[in-house]
Image (cartoon, rainbow, N blue to C red; front, side, top):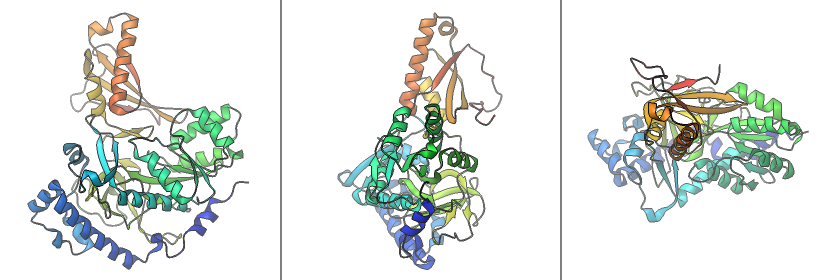
Length: 443
């Protein structure tokens, strides 16, 4: 019988841990750090200083946490427009790590870390994993992608500092993942929930029952998932499936996480200050109201993010959590306020697809993105119109053209997706906005 993660999760944190700091002390710490980070950004980041001057503000005007609403928002386009280093508040010689995530035009969104930033990131990931009942002696299989994606190294550093044994297997090669999970007696796995579902289904095909393996905890993030998916994963594998939240622009994974009660995600408020706003007006909403999550980094030195609009829709949970943590909780992310979607943990925008397609001569600017779900994994096919000359060409030439489109999409998106060539005028036209995405995942 697998060990109960709840017992380990409740035993790990002493009452003096940062997660349990009394609310008045937490608010005092937040104000002190907010004032310091606003001053740092004002003195070192041209864009932020200019925006404060436009509002007639200086750092000394921030006298309370409520004053944060007077500060300007930061949006993803700000990172793109200042690519690559325009939002840095530290000189490059103090930067020890650069990561990047997808941008809307093929240019990556660059994020930076000082040594102290990496230490903070590591510490919040230690607290995340500990809240799931993980600790010294656990064997953690890290199936998040390594490289420029923040997920892999974020989970890796936290797991090592926790005292666990880390298997840096990254993504892909499903049969090998299952072999390692079984032979190395893995007790926890980090991955997207959809990929873990694929692992369980493939294991069943190989005659392996996940419920008989030592793995007891799933650390799942990088894509939205439902409580129905959680129940299914737990039933077919015998694990406890936990949600964590993060985004590269803020730090990576480790901004918020569930506790053993699995009833909302606790922010690490000593490092990240959350707000909920009306996505249309930008006004701050009262606790409990659904709106767009806005985050401010309170301790990020290399690249402070002030009131960053995440486009994620959620709400604060107002009731105290029975686990005893004093940090605020949010409901699990249900949707986004923009048109981004996530495939295999990678952010994808329709504008990226258009950029990639139009780089290949012979492609017409008419396409649709078809999203489906096969064996629990989200799949993406791009149907694209091509010129009559291309479409009437020989089969071999069409296959070569498809391959060129797939290569271009992979270069821009960072993942390989299917392409289907269709003849001119076969994609329905619209008098208003073009319908770029056909989502069949729940049909």
